[in-house]
Length: 466
Image 1 (cartoon, rainbow, N blue to C red):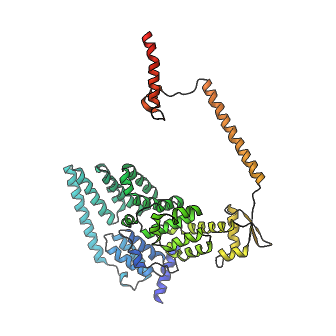
Image 2: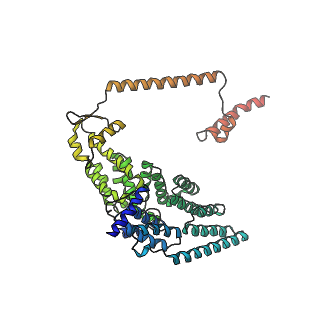
């Protein structure tokens, strides 16, 4: 009972701070889930679960304490300890380990001084490769102790000494790693473009899984669901993607790709890009419920699709990249299901719609009213007969509207042509240089050369006559 009281106090505080509280038990196994990742994302995910999940809170925070103490970031240990001392003060992990903190602070300080001294020696020797490696080692150390801003500045200093394409890509990946941790999505997109521009086609193909993963996460962070879905669906080889589990795991690729596709793609695209996609099928095998939900939507079993997704809502709310987008994604998928369900009918009883889509304790009619007002659903509600009636488009009005648009476009084009003719007749037309065309500046290959040769042959008789 005392432990429950501690948890109640902890989650009341989290709720007052605007955090998301997940009361349902997720389907994931915490140990198996976290074993899919490596690097600093492990702690971030454990701490998020400790902040949000009521059933897994204590286990996640204890694992976060252990993860923090296996690294060198003291602030992460403090953050996890601050949580567990409120949520579970009777646990052994709730005792602050001052000895570890003191020794780690001393060790980190000594290591920083050592790496800075090495880098200074490399700069005195003026060996570019040694300077690049010195900056890289110092940046990785600063990143491991949690000084992300200093690590980012150190990684940027690697650029002048990057002499090969592999070095340029290495610099970009280190900077992207920092920006992902800071949530700087525009910076991530800019740096991934630099990696692609500096590499050749073979290197870009080898880096395709990494590029698609990072671009997909950045686009998801900015709410561009359709573009993010295409990136995840085009990730490619799952064995290469497994090496980038310091960002997301192959299971996450399946979940992100399937959910975002359901929210943003039509039935035809879902069939071709998701279900018939041979490269993405290997990811869907890791998360069969995602494939089943997409198949249910494509086959018109909308209520079953929504039921599958709702059963995994708690899992999605515990994902660091997906959490804040879950309400929007579920709302878009639900609206699509309702619209597609209604498409074949001219009218449907509200009781039938409620049986298929109504949430327990909520008014489905109010949801339909909201969809009609927003323009998502082209229908009317007959409150007397309790019917949802489709609004048929008047073909005469549609034809007249199209005719008016065509007339306006014709008038606009005619005015532009008259303006062009007036400019030409007044001698205000800007003509291109003939010399530029002779040097191959034309849009068609070889045309500039042909024109130049013909003009020379016409000019020769005049020169001889002179």
